[in-house]
Length: 366
Image 1: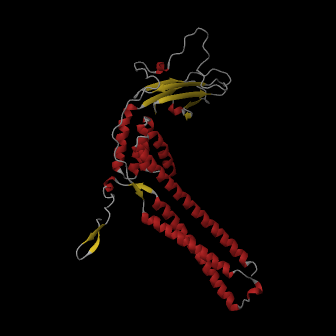
Image 2 (image 1 turned 180 degrees about the vertical axis):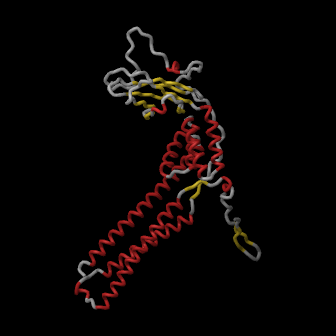
């Protein structure tokens, strides 16, 4: 009997640690959802005030914490207002694909229309490399690796300055920047053969190729990168062609199921109480050992029954918490409202107090 309390205490400690981990994970998920909703609401207010540069980062963080089609749609619209045409175009297409998978056909249609309207304004940059380029040649655009499959392919980029770098073992690095601002432009930047030599250190974007001898003509401007027959790109700082179609009404969002969320919270609370109660029951039946408790044959059986009841309470509490936590998380997630249900989701008028000569009461609409 002397080892019985130690066994039960170890078992109870393990169960308590498991329940604490479950509750901690549920709290973290609910905190992320609440933070994402707060960021989304703040971003919507900033967009209504025309402060898109401040709104976009908040929508990005909201999407990271709690991904949703409605947040992604608003982020694409924010990118469009900032002139980031390539980012907006690609994100509208992502929204269209996700909406189709979710059965939201109206939103899919709107997203594809917005993407199609942006496509003529896209700026495309083509990066080429020599056919005999070394196998370890790495090409980067704005710090991101450009795979060999992308070489020679026009890729949409946002308007602005873009830097292309190339490097290989035992060869001098190459870097060149180009300013792209003309809507619908298509530019090509060729990576030349890299000369042999140690990589340059502490050099910020050195010009491509060996240094020009004294008296040599200056290298051509970036406009020379344009293909024959294409108009030269605008000078740095020139505004992007204005295009601001009236955005559709912002999609409404709601909790997936308030009933499911409340049920999950209630089950989790009941499970916590059951685990704590079961632990107290187990602790009360194992608080003494040996002859100090004055056991007789009948009290031993009663203690075993009580001990079994305590373990049953703990197990039942874990089951309730294991069911309640996922229900609370899933039910509390925000989901977009179907377009055809937006009108039905409008708030009802408040109750009205009606007082007559012989009666008084409340009247409301549902």
